[in-house]
Length: 581
Image (cartoon, rainbow, N blue to C red; front, side, top):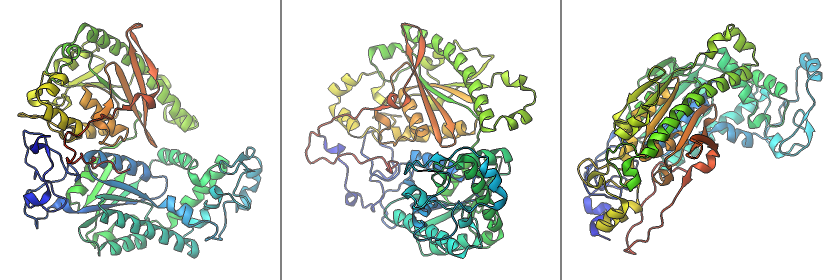
């Protein structure tokens, strides 16, 4: 292997551990990046230099149950990991179910039901089997199985229950200690996922963090005043581990009692935190209103900016590559070729498919809304359902290259708002534009081998040559816009762009991103759901000139290249920083 393809040791450049040997300078030759996040502000030399990006961040969630905190946390973690930050969620509820078992807590169980509801209980459906122990019961039983003994009734969350309160506070601080240990071991952004709904709890977290150097704190409070959203969230909560195998009505009654206990002790973030100049952000009704206070750090700004662009509207993000181009038929990369005849047929079929699929999704979304709301709320909010048959808006985004713009020529411009976006252009191959991979391997073996060793960080040589890390930064604004937009979007783009977009929506580590097999002729539909994005995949079949649905899980294949190092002493590529598994 050529000497210039080796990773230079830190001491040769006078850089401190954790800095980049390349120091943020853009080179026309490929290089191996070290394992620090590619989004960090890098510096060259100056071992004692410190920058804003050296700081780590603790995001502490605040809010009542059923206010969407876990939904926000999962989306935020996915976004920050995709950007390259080492990010991890620390959920207090998971630890509480183990730490506060019946061995440690002898307070009331969920079977303690008010007398006023006894008659109502007798009219409820027959008991279900416990998913853990297969015993029939409505409520935790004696002796309890492991799944049942870790449940806590609403009384466990009573602010007047001193013993239970002590357990809850101890569990929250234990999780916080785990969080800090993870940051000290190399993590960057840690998220404390809990209610943290009292001033006393937040004061304890602030005090504990004061002894940690270079660790910033950001409170994120989720407030929801929309009764429909709260009721849907409560119904989702009855499927949590606290209520596995229970009668849904019993579970909902207990959760609502738990919620009332939390409301008695809940104090929103305000003057107490402002006196300490603590950074905080309040997200009200899923982004309808955002309040930010004293937000100054770089990482904090990334978090707040992202959270300002969320919404819960039902929609689908369709991602597909363009139809086959003349260069595709020849195996050439890059370029700006027109569609081949097969690509034209795909483009026409794609327009028909999206017309049909968009109408089908509208009907499916209306059906799910009625089911979630038990039909009553839907009828009250939409007494005249004639308007529901109106097709929802849908946008079509393409790159600025001919093969994508030609792919959408069959779409009706009166029905679809078509945008051409330069950020969706294919990864630029520099001086290798228009070549085949076989030609690159034959004429530039060192370059070819370097790319095989580390596709994510490899930057094509020549002016303007890009890496996948560059593409992530280029698509950051596209991702934020896709999170902000309130209706469906079809993105007709290129292989590297489709890989990068799908790695975000499906939370695929960037280590795997460049090796995802995404052939021509597939449509990937990502639908935001409460617990993540739901993926469906369709494949174009030329024989029937139409699309057929295939299994989404098997469609996202990762192909790992086998590359033998020509130099046994060469250093293998480091993993992508976003791989936090």
